[in-house]
Each structure stands twice: as structure tokens, then as C-alpha cells.
Image (cartoon, rainbow, N blue to C red; front, top):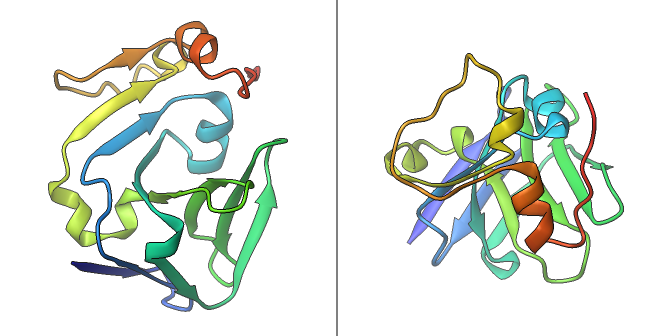
Length: 142
């Protein structure tokens, strides 16, 4: 299986070869809201399956993660832990094929804006619940 996408201007190209997580995770933390304007919706793909070209800029947004965007048009592309071999959490909206992926999890639901309610029967965690089981993550403030 291969799925392809590109940024708004087309300069940054991303291809996922082979298997990927065919489910979308949503994050409502304040950092993701600042980055995307609402929420971060992504699907996971193994590092070995992701290739990209173009003017991609990375921003180290925390001690453990980077966020990437197109240096030409500013389209958000992914968030990824900086440890070698970490998977990519790719912006689901970039990939037309991801439009059929179900929503499989939602985190930081207590920080979600009222204008972004998500439907479905999937696991949901508050900031405290998520951070209790993910010790490398520390909360942020508005």
C-alpha cells in the first residue's frame, strides 16, 4: 500500500509505503491548538515507511518532539518524537486516503474548544489521564 500527499503549495511531498495506522488520533492540547488553529488530527506511520522531499522545516516544540511544516507555504506536516526511529504522526488532512480512517482516540479533551466536538465511540482522555500514563509529556497552559 502506498499513500501520497503534498502541502498546500505542492513543494513538500510525503509518501507512506507499506502499512500505516489506518486510524486517526486527535489532540486538543494547547500547543496543538496553537499549531493548527483547532486540534491536531493525525495517523501514525513507521519511520521506515515515510519518505519526503521539498523545503521542510522542523521546529523542536518540546524536549521530546519536533513539528514539521513546509518552509514555502507553512502547511503543517507532522509531529514526531526526536528519538531515532520514532514513528511519524502525519497530519491526516493532508492525505485524501485518510478521509476514510475512523477516529480512534482523543486526548486532552478537557482542553478542547467548544466549537470542536468530535463524535464517535473511541477512547478519550483528559490532560491528567493522558499525562499519568505518558510520563515524558508535561502539560502546557493557555
